[in-house]
Image (tube, rainbow, N blue to C red; front, top):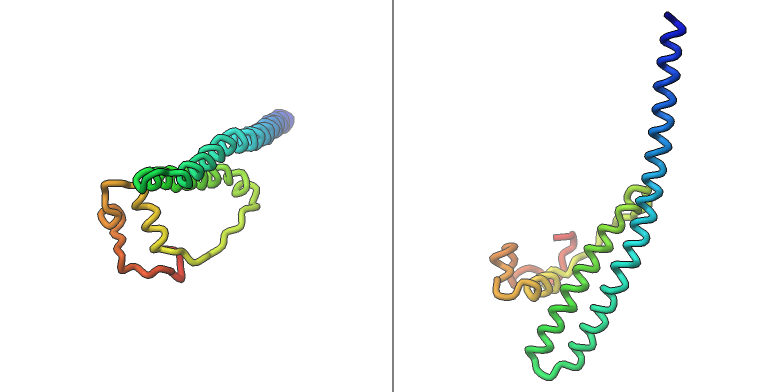
Length: 139
């Protein structure tokens, strides 16, 4: 009876050790994937941002300039989202540092409103021009 219990315990430990090895391998593969995707996604995004800047600088009319700037602002927002997603590996490794910085609410609201043409930002987020230009804490 004692021998049988010891054998069961040994098999459980072997299964746990094998599962641990698989989990570690999977984690390593995920890190490699994230590093590869980081490069593969950021490279074309930087090209989009660069050409958007060129378009904005060489725009013939104010409308063309606004459209190019909207592409640029939206592209930067998308790049930030991509960076946040790719920071997952830093979070899991315990290497991500979080800081509390002031936010330029007026600038942020104006930027968001350009990304949502035709819809007042105040309708979407209840944000008004009366909001302070600099918030001491994230808003």
